[in-house]
Structure formats: C-alpha cells, structure tokens
Image 1 (spheres, rainbow, N blue to C red):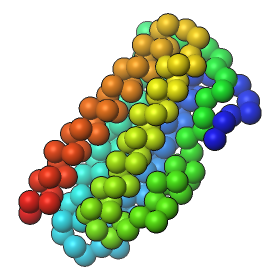
Image 2: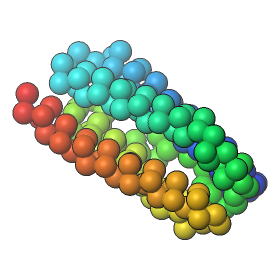
Image 3: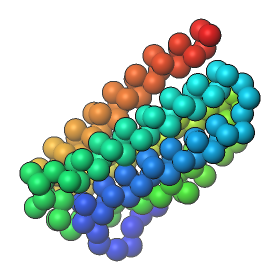
Image 4: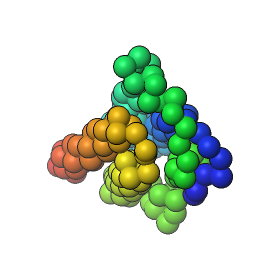
Length: 156
C-alpha cells in the first residue's frame, strides 16, 4: 500500500521493527494453540527469529552514526503494518502444519525483501540506499537460513 504522507527513514524503520514484534506476537499466539511438537518447535524458531530482527532494527535506529540519514524525509514508501502483511501472506494458508507455516514465513520474507528493494530504489541519500541494501541482504540471508532450518524440522 502506498503512503499518502511524508515520513522519515526512522519512521519507516520503526514500522519495520513493529512489524517484526507483531509477527513474533502472532507466532506466539499460534504456539499457544498447537499440540504438534514439530509445529511448536517451528513457531518457537520463528518467534526467536522475529525478535532478533526487531532488535537488529532497534539497534540500527539507536546507532548515532545514521542519525542524520534516518531523520531524512522520504516519500512513496509502502506501508508495512503487520495487520496488512499478515492478511496478505496468510490468505488461504494452512498454519496448522509446518509446511503451511513455512510458506507463510517465506511470503513474509519475500515481502520484506521486496520492500527493502523498493526503499533502496526510492531513497534519495546514498547512505540510506546503503543502509536499506544492507537490510535487504540481511533479510535474504535470513530467508536462506530458514530454508536450512526448515529442513531440520522436516527431518524430525
């Protein structure tokens, strides 16, 4: 969804941090309702992963090195509210299986990779482009790591 307002890069990253925290809460709620051990392990993994990503974004926001760039006004960036992203990625998904949950997590990853690509393209400052590119690369790396981890859950 396109923004209809200006916002700082700090606000954009704040939305992404909140998205990760909301995703963690979503996976936690799902974990409270499941009895399958493999699914519970997968949900625990996803909760930890989202919390780590939220913390990494928080540290980026707290890093004084990027203060000036983060306070730059940006336009045209999409919104990444957890409600919208979850609605988008869970449509028709069966989150009661490891495979279905993995498909949702992959869609979330791809949504974030695409979002960071958009931010790189639309950012006017080179420093922000580098910052968003680093976050893009990190998100892709996490997605690849998840593929490896999912293989372990399926081997159980």
